Length: 234
Image (cartoon, rainbow, N blue to C red; front, side, top):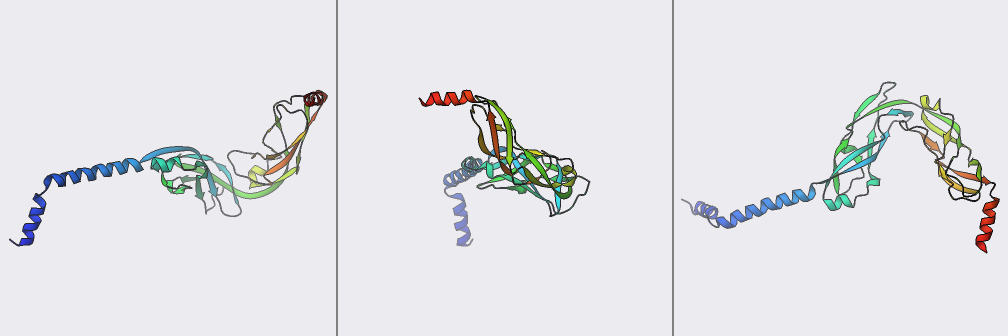
């Protein structure tokens, strides 16, 4: 028998304990690595962004956010900024009045670093498109709470109108928009606040120009408030 064959046989039969130990260590290392990189965490309410071709707008969509399951090392997932996550759906076709059912996959999740998306819930999205239109409507401010002294006389916005761009069918029935509520609790005199405009609907997408306005809240009947301020200065 050739010497090379004998050497190979001797290699196989010698140091059995060492070889067995090496095999055990290799298996343990594999399981440790798998356990380390198999940490999972579900991120709720990840923003869903639907991109449509020019001239079209979203008339209706079944959900605005999705829950995403991420897998990776615990350290990578813990340092991940969930605010950067978004699910991006690219629609290149027109659906007309008929709704489309789109399958949502982990590949659509953007903003993941050091980990990977493995599941999306819900797993599908229903979208209906419409022709995009443009409309200028008044924007109105609103308040939340009660001033410490006096009452809210009026709320004015500058600019007083906003341009909406969205589905024609929805804009036909949209006559105005509102700002996010302005907190007036504890106020004793008139004030000015920059405030975002609230979208007119939850299940359709609209672009607003501008997206925020300057809100002036006028408080009257606050003579007690002026007296309170004067006394606080003494």
